[in-house]
Image (cartoon, rainbow, N blue to C red; front, side, top):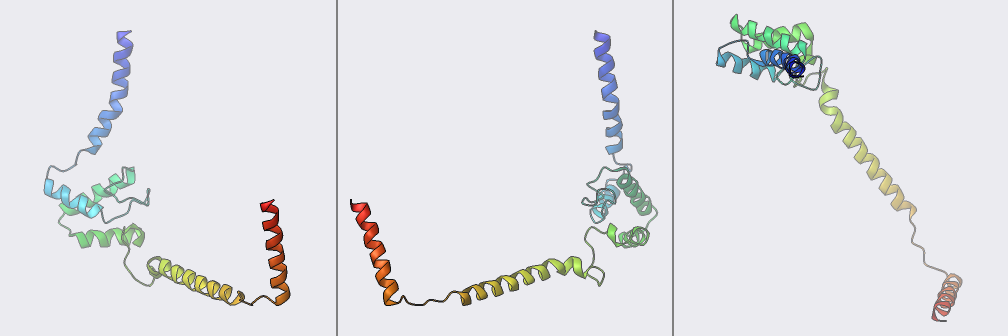
Amino acid sequence: MKLIVVFLAILFSVPVIALAKEARPVSDDPELEKRVMALSEELRCLVCQNETLAGSNAELAVNLRNQIREQMTAGKSDREIIAFMTERYGKFILFRPPVDRTTYLLWFGPFILLLAALIFLFRYVRRRRELIVDTPLTAAERRRAEDLLQTESGKTAA
């Protein structure tokens, strides 16, 4: 029985040890790692798409961080690395895309939709207001309403 417990402990600890090995920084230079993580915050994971490279554990994200680390070790600047990544993967890799003619809809689309909704709401309220016509009751309508009220109050009093 003890042998089975030891075997299971070893079996389940191997993947944890492998993950811990991957989580360690590849470089021993803390400044380089800080720079890699700062630049990784500006780039999107192409697998997860809603995470940065720094926050993703996808295999492609790890490979891209390693690529960034290699380029930084080679002496390239952050701008050069971003230009390389953008050229290779397109503007989609940028986590905060620039404002240019290809991204106008992305940046200004929500405001256009909000403006259109406000215009629609304003026109709807104005039309509804025009449909409401306040006309006074005629003498016959007033007498009928009083008769109904008296009949109702007579029923409740009895």
